[in-house]
Amino acid sequence: MNTFSAICLLLCASQTMGHLQFSEEELKCIKDLNLDKNYIESIITDDSSKFIPEDDPKFNLFLNCYWKAIEFQNEDGTFNFDKLEKEISTFTRKNFGGKPNDEAPIGLDIANAAVASCKNVPAGVSHGQTAARVKNCIDKRLLELIEKKN
Image 1 (cartoon, rainbow, N blue to C red):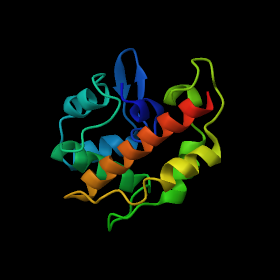
Image 2: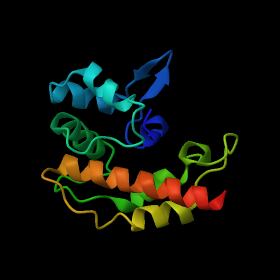
Image 3: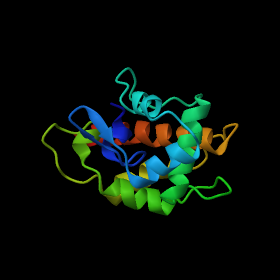
Image 4: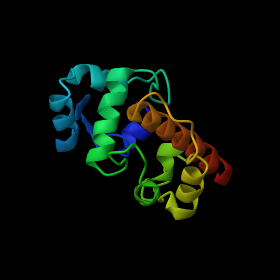
């Protein structure tokens, strides 16, 4: 499963018995955008990469809708970086390259550093693609920063 996907920043879906349980916001986006729930789940649970695809128009639509719903992204495509930092700071280190039993939260220092380095990611062709690029950038930086701390 993609790192962030497993942790609930991108998708607050939880995995139960091999199936994702989507949040109310995610289900609303899937319905409103007339997307195939199984398709979205297949991307989230794809173990072939630690990152989400940036060039998938359907998934980008979904991501943009969801990030707007949870106020990570504004209607104009800009990001609420403060909210992203605060949310990321609560995630456990073990999910981003930390030791398997490390339940410690990432903390604001690492979250702030990861987000700061991704504030100028080049815009995509859509707000959703830009969100995917920002998410992947943050994921990569978190993995690097937490690995350095180990």
